[in-house]
Image (cartoon, rainbow, N blue to C red; front, top):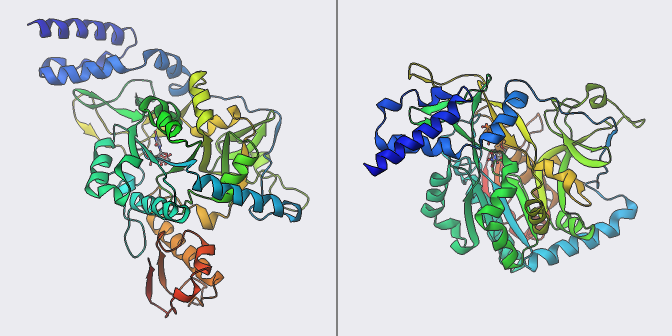
Length: 478
Ligand code: UTP
């Protein structure tokens, strides 16, 4: 009886909260629900940060936010992928410093894997998707193998932090357990959840995922900074003596989490947050543009980037704003600690997404185009808050081929092609002849496991173990 009274008073409080905001449709099926369902729904309503929604619904949901585009917009200073003559010494010293930092256990791997991967439509956490062209390794397995290979190469321990969300946490933990943490010491792998926020329709009404549950969505990869602190991962990194988090997204099988040059440049320039970019594929490519905005390093999304600047060319014909964000960053542990301690919140952004929901009649609706707004923080919004942020250009074909869609651009197919093409380039650099079709594409399927080589340099040092490639053959180097 007592618990029913508590439930009743909690319901009254929730109803008052909802009614004041025109959200009482959320309890439309209250009378049909059992006690546990009621508790579940109340728990969710009570956990909603209403102050945040009150502020953001008018500006970010019912209308599109109009961020002020800075008037003083300049291209970001970028360290080139190949050093200019006078940078050669700097790059060599930085690479050496990077190797020393990795070997000293200063670098931790940090994967953000809390997204819902709706565009891919894979049934399970995206990291559980088999992606390698021959071995069929999953993304998580591939990253774990890179970590394992780096541990061996540098004779050090490397913790791996993996951010999940309520949407996939249990399934991700199960996947790691079933695969025995992919051979990594369990105590060196930490999975933790990010925050969730309600998804809203374009009028600003909360969507229901079922009669007793709100449609919730993870609060963006920018939510990772607070989640790192809240989960204890940040203090764990600090305790282990790690000073740098190597941040990467779960969807990029080409990522090189332990890049000595990147790490060494980051450390030797006193950067608190660094980022890799690639040259843009075209003026309007759908990537964020790295710029100096009013003097601060900032990513301006392609949707907000002034068209006339996107097309601007230098006298040498190169695009003036040519640095595209590929979501590979280094974050100092002390930087994240400072942001959290100083409550330096990243801004929320509006993301239009497909969110299944139940309508007024209780029928489940699976929309085929974006029907809702998710409020998300983006990790690159921490760049303007960082001291001495650094940008390093890399070759896209070497480091970036994300799996976003079920087919077409940025899909499993393009990522597998990119893995094979990279493997061919690495082998070619070691003098191996690559059979090619008349259109120049490789006439072989090759997979190079991280345990065999993490980069072209390692392939070159294993010349005596490289195969002769027959046209049409499959070669798995592991
Ligand atoms: P995306 O922007 O591609 O979003 O995330 P998504 O949710 O994975 O996919 P869609 O848009 O629903 O198809 C880029 C990276 O950021 C992570 C994702 O897991 C992916 O590694 N991410 C995204 C989070 O960790 N949390 C989030 O809230 C959003």
